[in-house]
Image 1 (tube, helix red, strand yellow):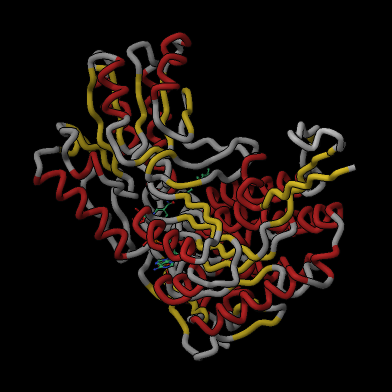
Image 2: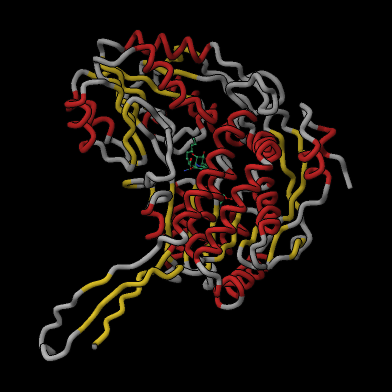
Length: 503
Ligand SMILES: NC(=O)C1=CN([C@@H]2O[C@H](COP(=O)(O)OP(=O)(O)OC[C@H]3O[C@@H](n4cnc5c(N)ncnc54)[C@H](OP(=O)(O)O)[C@@H]3O)[C@@H](O)[C@H]2O)C=CC1
Ligand SMILES: CCCCCC/C=C/C(=O)O
């Protein structure tokens, strides 16, 4: 047993040290297993670039075992027979356990992903707890409708109709590295509330919180096979899961490129899909907006989670009257941000998740410079061995530049002036994505006129990337298919059965 915790850049709690010191295994059918082929994957601390843990490199055989376990748990046994109120109680218990272990889970997220530990605790883990509790409440409220049919021809008979909402079945969930625990919760909450079973494949960069979550699932008392975790590579374990003929639904969050791939593989088996994909979200500042409030709000909109957010406000459109002031305010905030390791309590902006992501983001910044943009602030990588990129505001950009058109997924915003609302509505929509947008103004008439013109699944007003469990979340256009959260998510996790009875 190796004490990996002693190699970390900053001290962690005793609970985290204990977790990191034991060999990691996958939870399959209630048992803790190594990969069937025996391989492991290193997990790296993005603040140092050093490996600090190993997880099983699960493959197709492990996915087969996990899907079989989930299938068995769904098709018969304790779980299938469980009353909705007992599913609610279990999910509430899981939420309590997550809350009781919040610091450890937050430290694992900070280590795996690089995000500041306070953000992990008071945003990621807090949202997970709320999300599980919110979804637990739905377990007893999922229901159908009654109808009074007007069946033609057979007029002498009386009919009665109703619908049932039945769990869709075995859910395969593939999640990214930017909010590892939260993305797991967004899928397991509605799945377990509605009576599905699940196989989760976390991202290779950030597998640890999913494995700790699986321990808590066991501690909560879920029957074996209801929740399974297979760690492994996307093109191996992820591909085996998304194309598996015995899953009933695939829930995916990640890039649009891989979303299309897994979506096609799943549809080959007519597996139901929900895809939450990329974005290039505009933040639209009207001429009446308060400059200081916009600068602070836009800083959150782009720099939160080091810009590694599907809803990141990566295009900032400011009315020409306020453009210079907003850019100056935002640049001052960016210049003052403390960039550092996630475990450092003073850190405001952590490293990017991996060397690959750092190089990808720096490549975008260089392409912006090559095409004629200029950095009002930032524009370079941070010092040290970690995957740091300084918070960056690009100006002098044109709509056809790659930095304006493509998802960067880093702390980089492109600020651009505009003249009037028609122009900004057209430019804001000039993207294949449609995940989110924000409008900054206190002129309610103009705000309400703009909202329906923006082609996006979420429009925020005077805030950006603020989420609530009651609000459905998902994308228009190439930002995805389906909605997570809110009542709407149960459209993705249940099948509707129509029952027509002749009396
Ligand atoms: N919408 C969003 O929230 C996110 C968007 N992105 C965007 O994607 C870019 C690349 O990030 P990346 O991590 O590569 O995102 P991916 O879309 O590649 O990864 C998301 C998940 O899909 C898995 N995966 C990868 N390839 C396959 C496959 N062939 N079949 C099944 N599953 C697969 C990954 O596994 P593994 O980790 O092992 O590769 C991971 O679990 C980012 O720069 C960003 O622009 C990234 C993350 C989240
Ligand atoms: C405050 C938490 C924000 C979570 C945003 C959800 C993002 C999902 C994604 O990037 O895939």
